[in-house]
Image 1 (tube, rainbow, N blue to C red):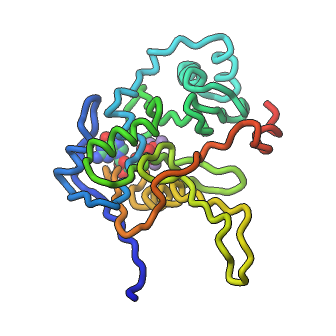
Image 2: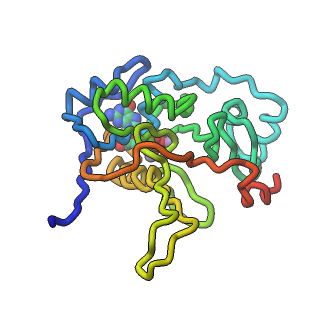
Length: 244
Ligand code: GDP
Ligand code: MN
Ligand code: MN
Ligand code: MN
């Protein structure tokens, strides 16, 4: 039996994305997608195509935002944007860790100031799983789509890619009930495969001026539907221990 292998293709040649751009058509003009492929897209380009770019002047900072911005050393308009993209603030100082309206927890609600231009900010897509579903349907293949973002991590140095939206693939692979090498059934393990794939995609994309926001993985066997990545508030011990 041949060794299992996974290939990752970094798609080159995508333009600077603007609102309304048809990302599936652009990708299909550069790469032939096959059934079973996993297409990873940087949230940056999905957000740009969905018109999620904002000017800082679009925001009227509240007194709360002005006060927090002073301590954070940030522009109060930026802090206001973070507040508006958040349903809960978990940490306010010395940085903003918040819960987005779609359930992702990230610094600054995932609002990005890289690769967007002066005085501009880029919000995450409103509902990245819906975006992933729409993009997958438009690609017209039995494939999966993962929308990635580069995030910092608690307890560990360095940023890594995570999945903020996915479609056509289970976010988690359930190992419960599988036998280990000694015949003991696993009782807890759910593997965050969408995050693992997103991290590998992020590794190929780069963070700066590479202009390579799309990666296709071929050769992966993956479950098509399954559980969520965002832990429910009531089940999140670490979240409950955070004091403002
Ligand atoms: P994020 O991780 O989703 O925040 O995205 P990044 O800002 O880190 O960008 C990831 C990759 O996408 C890098 O290679 C960027 O150069 C590239 N990128 C960002 N915006 C665009 C764009 O509009 N067009 C193209 N072709 N590449 C972009
Ligand atoms: Mn960025
Ligand atoms: Mn980002
Ligand atoms: Mn990135």
